Image 1 (tube, rainbow, N blue to C red):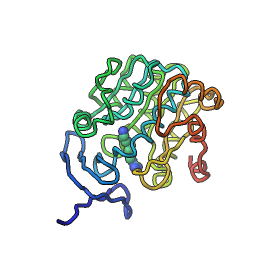
Image 2: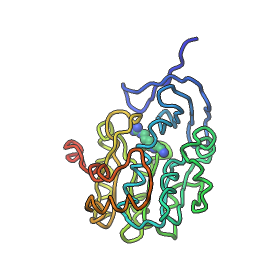
Image 3: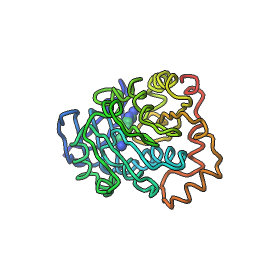
Image 4: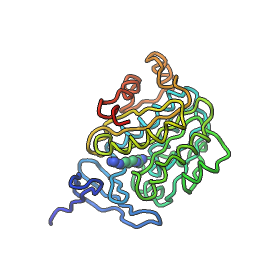
Length: 282
Ligand code: AG3
C-alpha cells in the first residue's frame, strides 16, 4: 500500500510533510477546514486550513510558554482570558495554576473543541470540566470590543493571520484587549515563526506601540512550527513585568508546585532575548 503524505501549505515553495498513518477526522466546519491524523513521529496532528496547529508530541513547548510566562510574570493572576485555543492546551496549563480563580475562553469554532476533546484528549486533560472555566463560543474580536469584565492575563492562541484568525492581529483587537486588562495586566499572543513571518512581528510591533507602554516579544522553538523560533508578542502597561529577577521568578514558580516539561524560570527570562534580525524588524 502506498504511503499517504500530507504537505503543509503555509509557505510558498517550502513545507513540512507528514505521513498520514491514519486519518481520524476531516471536515469543513462552519469556519475552517479541520483535519486530525496520526503520525508515527508526532502522534496525533491537528491541521486547520492547511496549517499544523498542534501535535501530541510537541504541544507542551508552545502551551507552557504561552501560559506560564505571562502568569508567572504577573505574579497574582486571578482572572485569565483565552482567545481561541480550542484544542484546550492553554486552558489545561492555566488550570494548573491554583491561584487562578476564573478563566473565560472565547473560541469561534465549537467543532475544534469537540474534535480535540475526542481525538486529542491529553490537550485539555479534563480542563473543560474545571468549574473555573467559562467557555464562550464566539468571535474573540467582538468579545474584547464588548466585554464588560476585565482580566489580569489575556492569551491569544490563534491561527495565523488569514481566515478566522486574521482579525486577531489588528490594531482594534489589540485595543480591545488593552481595554479588557486590569492595571498591571499583560497580553500575550502567538505571533508566527520569526524567520519565516518576520513581517507579522513587525506589523504587530507597529500596532502595539501606540496602545501599550511596554511591549516586546519572546520566543521558543516549536518543532512542528517549522522555520525556527516561534515569536510570542508581549504587551503591558507595566514595564516591570518583564524586568524581574530570576530569584523572584523562581520563587513564584516553585510556589505553584507545577511540574513542567519545557518551562523553567531560566528559560522564562532567556526567552525575551531576541536575535538581531528580529530586533531590527520590530
Ligand atoms: N496556534 C498557533 C499555530 C501557529 C502555526 N503557525 C505557524 N507555524 N506559522 C496553535 C494552537 C495551539 N493551541
